[in-house]
Image 1 (tube, helix red, strand yellow):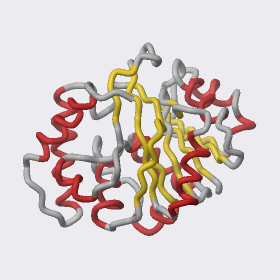
Image 2: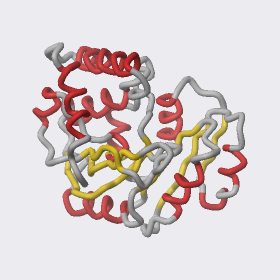
Image 3: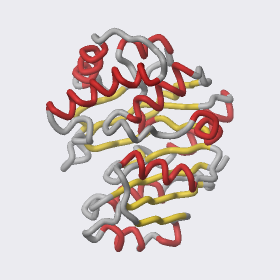
Image 4: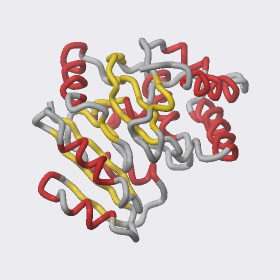
Length: 250
C-alpha cells in the first residue's frame, strides 16, 4: 500500500531536518514524500533540497496559509493513504507507517488514527502532553473530542469524495475536516494504539489565549457549516480535554 506523506513548511530551517529524517527512516518501502514550502526566506528550501532524491514532489511558492498548503499537497498525492507530518514534527517511531498500513489492510477502515506525543518545542525528548486517541466513538465529537489530526491517516478516496480543508477557517480546518469525514459522513474509522507523531507544542491553535478563543469559535462554526447543531458549551469542553492531556501518560 502506497502512502503519501505531506509536509508543509515555511521558514523552518532549524527544524525541517528532523521532520524529513523521520519520514526517510520509515521501514515501510512505499512512501511518497511531498513537501510544500510557502516561499521560505531562510535556509529551509536549501535544507529540503539536500533530500531531493527522497522527495517525490517539492513545491515552493506563496500560499494563503497552512491549510491552503495542505490542499496543494493533497492535489499532488497519489498514494492510497495520506498522512501529514508538518515541519518541526516527526513520525514517532520507525515502524509507524508499517503499523498504520497493516491497520488499514486488516480492518478495511477509511481512516486510522493513533496517539500523539506533544513535546517541548526546544527539547523534543520531553513529552509535555499525551494525546490518547482512544477507541472510536462517533458521539464523542459532541463532547468536545476529536482524534489527533497529525496522528490520523486517511484514504485518498475519502478526500476525493468529501473534499479537503476549508480555508475560510484559519485555525480549526483540521477539526472541521475530521468532523465532516467521521461524524457527518460516517466513514469507517479504526483506532490503532500506537504513538504516531511527536509534535512540538505552540501550533497555530495553541499560541495564545486569543488563538485558543478563535479556535474554539471556529469549532462551533464547523458544526454549523455542516448543517449540525451543537451546544455552545463545546467551546468549554474542548479546552478541558486539552487540560486532561497533561495528566495522561504514554
